[in-house]
Amino acid sequence: MRASELPKTEVVSKIKVDLESYLGEKMKLRANIGRCKIIEREGILEETHPNLFIVKVKEERERTRLVSYSYVDVLTKTVELTDPENGENIISWLPQ
Image (cartoon, rainbow, N blue to C red; front, side, top):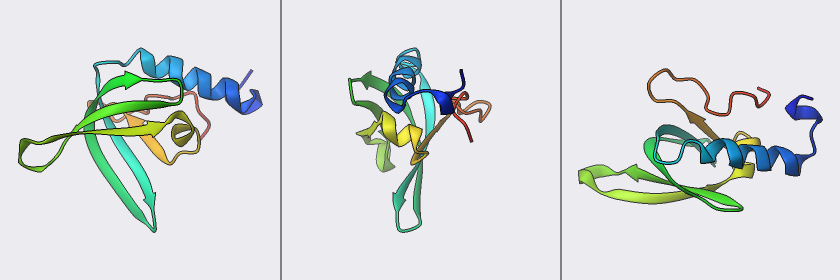
């Protein structure tokens, strides 16, 4: 069964399970924050929660910041997560 055939709640649960395997790993975030604004950052997946995940990102002047996104953001492509080494999508089974 493909991701497009699964109920949305099951797809979100599968995204959560897949991200849990990346805890402590580096990833690249590309987030569409609206009005044609896109933010790209690198960070480390710190925590996963039932409805969201938290990434620690480096800011200017060696500061770090915790940012959170929901699994639905990944599903709707508002947030894209890629491997910083090879540029491949972390959740590769989602339809483009």
